[in-house]
Length: 171
Image (cartoon, rainbow, N blue to C red):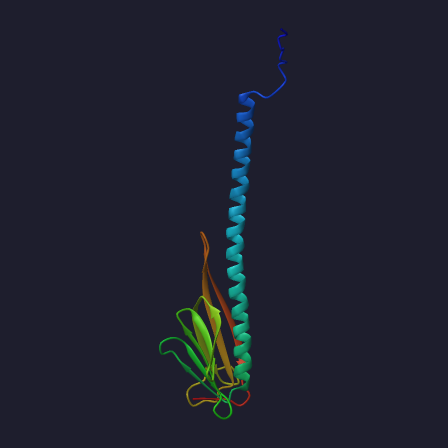
């Protein structure tokens, strides 16, 4: 019988295989950690960008509504409320309740923005001074504030718009 002779370099030793598996496990852990961090950052950025876009759209819509309004009323009972009255029975209301900004137009109720911390509406005269109950309202300054919280940082973002009215008066 012939005896088989094995060459020393005919395969990998157990130690070499274990070392390769260890290196691959470390590299896989690094890649998985990087992917998880990237995914979390992307989700936070998407929420932040969505809220910014919603706030900009809400203020654009509010600005157009203020321009068309005939009378304007501000109330802070149970959340910030801005009521805009046009010709006839047309009434548009903006209300912040539970972090949700809603626009009500007739019997239509539409959510404009989620995650808001505060809404303020300030009535001003045509020359930019604060308007009293008896002054003619020429402009409305609307401010939306929301707070975003990340892993280690909390940021406050404020959006404001000053919208001019046609011939509005306060009520």
